[in-house]
Length: 444
Length: 62
View 1 (cartoon, helix red, strand yellow):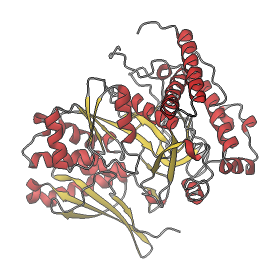
View 2 (view 1 turned 135 degrees about the vertical axis):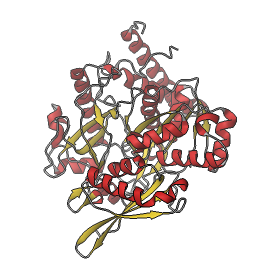
View 3 (view 1 turned 90 degrees about the horizontal axis):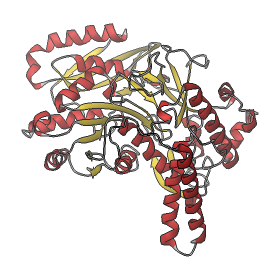
View 4 (view 1 turned 90 degrees about the vertical axis):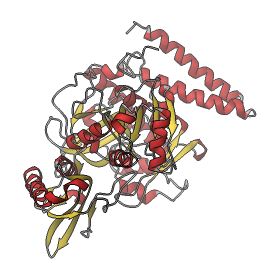
């Protein structure tokens, strides 16, 4: 096999835009028809809206199809067919994979996949890993918990599909994982950015310099937006001496976006497998022009067990105006997912971008990688508390660091913060999704 | 990138899907073949999806 080919699928990744749109329309009709015919949940939703597959003649017609929101999925599960409810489009005996969402925004949602879907999940990941330079010669380590959360499961299967030597790093503690990286001369790794940064710290304490003593040259991050946040990416790349790439996906959706080896600061949408729409989060109007952020509505075009048709992800993204120099025709979203279009990130009526906060914290010399943001209600007013840690060698510069942080936060986010500085090692460390943002306000 | 005959590839993958399904349908009483052919069907389907929009018309069913 020719490893120098830059694309996993040299054809769909470079399809002319008009051809790509035709393909998306045909695929949308197919998955919409499938969901309409096979699932009571979808049928009822679409019948109530007075829409059926015959009505879909152009991409503009998609907007007549009702969106599916997470709370709707929660309301049907634990019912027949147990435990998924009637969004399921296949007989239960066709289901080979159970996963559930992490519950970050509420009660976890169960997700069923068939073996065909699992091939598809691995294919989504194989597409992005190939674009990031993974090849069969790589030995890849996956330090995650291998449990009910989808996390890096599909990455594992994608590595096998690519032909990489795949090393499962579940259950081991961080020290054991670092020793295994060293012992096996691992060349690639996948984990959350938070965990990757934490691993470098632990390695340093063990007397191992991740950059000099380990062979890891590629790291793919997912689960949090950090790898596309410039200051976080820089910290990880410097700590490991490796290229760091971002990827974004979700249990209910699939692995829909990725950074390619050009590292343009944007994510590609995998437009052969997903159809992304953006809508204004207040008016619901479609956003088609670059540079206007809105809420992502997404369809997984080939996932059949428990389909994802016009799922309201609440993720805030915007289209880029440029095409990537990698040659893919798939659109770019600059900065990736920059926030969420729900109450969680609205403070004092302003959209608070967790990514912007992280970029500021990680750009300040003398602060550790850890931080937490709490939003509280005091009387009628919202307050934002940010907890940061000083690096061990920065304790004598606390006031100056705090001042820098305050000024930068004000400049980059237009909001004021109550800054609390904590000693190094006292804020929580995370392995999977870091819960750095806590909204303590009561929402209806 | 070498020029490939995508039409020929499409014909071969279509045949593979058909063959895998035939094997699957014949082997209700032979789990070892039945379940392995099910996996081949999934892989063949993935190959088909990889060709759709290029040379292959998009079928309106799975």
